[in-house]
Image (cartoon, rainbow, N blue to C red):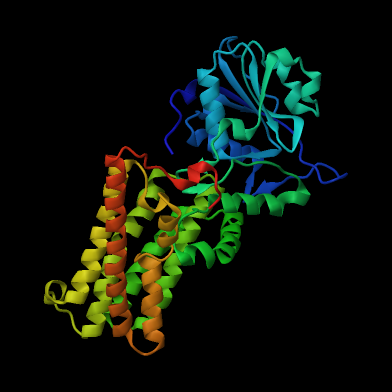
Length: 410
């Protein structure tokens, strides 16, 4: 995500709120390998707040009376969308009252405040001690819950997912991490990523987060596996090649989730990850064809109709998706429920790998390749039809928008 415009002008203070086990002493708690204060700092820096503008603990540098100030409790985990929304409110607010974000589970608990330098001292007790909203003069506060600030539909992850605000204690750590992992998952994706990988991916992501492994290292390993799988396919070693290919698709799921839950998403990581996803499938298909042929033949690219259909169909399919996005500012898979369903099985890498694997299991790697070609034509026809239908509806004056914005969970 892009930084919030003007975020470098906002002063942020992280109010120390001790995490305790039920009835026990103060307990240091890490969520996905990060302290709660460090997690907030990373999210704030990603949103555009400079390190110099963030104060923690009891250190509060002087602030001008009219400067925007944002205060967070550090015993909560905030959805990144909430943090960005609060920053935007602090920059755009013309209301004389301060804005207080309250915990919807316990509405009397204030967890963040958007205010100014002139009012900060009066409001700090609300965040550093168990002071209820009722004890603060209500005429000075405008209370909001997460749903008031952030829409439930996430266009970035293509799903209906209300923003989370999670109270952290030693006894709730697993539930908190599981909720955050679910939030990091795309709502519209292929059948393997959606239903097969979540449980093992969560376990591996938790292990990597605890070990402080960078998501870019995982992405780098994916690049290596792409190369190894391609070489094995060319050699006709389809079984070992598929093992590497499936392992790569698994790590492709893990790296994005690891980046989101540890607040380590970066522009370089985004380019490496999505660039790899976009480029490598045609090379796998060509390598498989070369492995079937038993020798390298450049003419195979131009004269074998199956290869032409698979690679050409992949490119045309991507162009169709881009055209739909350009014309309607909406991904084609997000338009209607049938489009979201078809995304789970359309002729993309993972569904095609299923077909190649099935062909190999019956001793016919050539049959799997033919099935990929047939399914590519079917998928291309479906998406072409849907693009045409959308154009007709737009011509008739009908809006083209995602079905999930109506508030129906995916």
